[in-house]
Image (cartoon, rainbow, N blue to C red):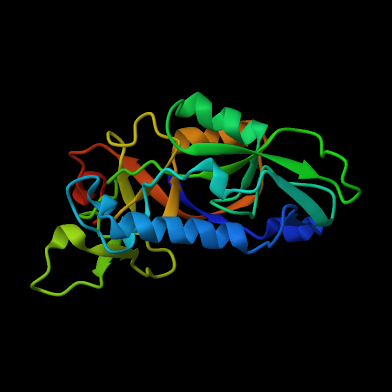
Length: 235
């Protein structure tokens, strides 16, 4: 099953903290936010012919110069394969290899040098990970989500959705369309734009490579485009 991913704080269990080696630690985050706001102001959110409120902030490819070239350990000395950082986190070569095996094109891996506390290079290749793949794969008829921030006069194509609460033991009705995510490792959906989705194929690669460092927060059945909830008794 596909899953939504949270950048976890697992690195804190290692006692790990990284900072921008090149200056103000907050500056890169502010620069990324400013760039995305400028993209929205220029109406680049019409990439698929539709306007999405929160969704207008996704799908943009970021200039690599917005990111620091060097980060340094201020605490700890170990990294997971996905560690909290600018963009969607700092990832390792193993993470990138798993992604490229499933999705050779799309999403950004921006190289960054990691320094130990003594300013010697930390062994390995590291990247800022940014998801710029957009796919409207969320199944809206499965019964697992409901619209938010929507009113009757509004075009439903602009609505965003959140996961419905369910009772203990109740089967999950969350689903994405497998046909639409074929060949994708990671994407964002304008109908649920605050979340990052990892496909089952990508998760399988990551598990096989024993990669760690994120939290799989919700699982979504991968179903064909013509699937309806009653097809497998989840109604």
